[in-house]
Length: 140
Image (cartoon, rainbow, N blue to C red; front, top):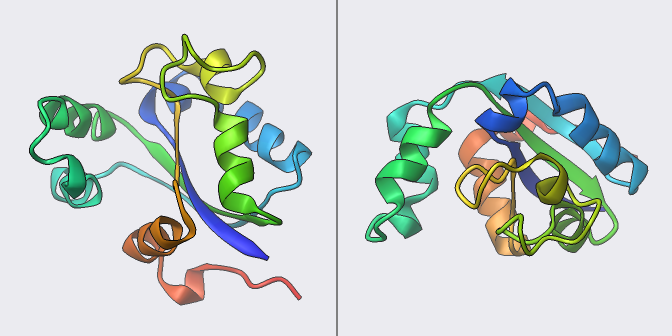
């Protein structure tokens, strides 16, 4: 089973879309192996998005991601990384396919409702950034 990392972002949490989004993941065959509802500190958000530090939107991104609770999740299933990205849709909700999470729940490119790892290497790094190994359930 492949694992991936996902965040339900503050706007989607605030708009009460956690259940809708989790339901969509589960309907598509992904299972939750770990989850926690938290509010990110500025330091934690900056560390997570460190690769964007030199980009002009970095401050706005950190501010948004610390503006309210987020749901951090480890999802697992066959081809979990690719499946999660397909379910989320394009980063820009205007370009996202109908029925995708970002088409349904995003407010803008910046407030696009969800994050998902873009590769297996990123998934491993992101999971380890937020979760201890004992937090993640192993299926058997």
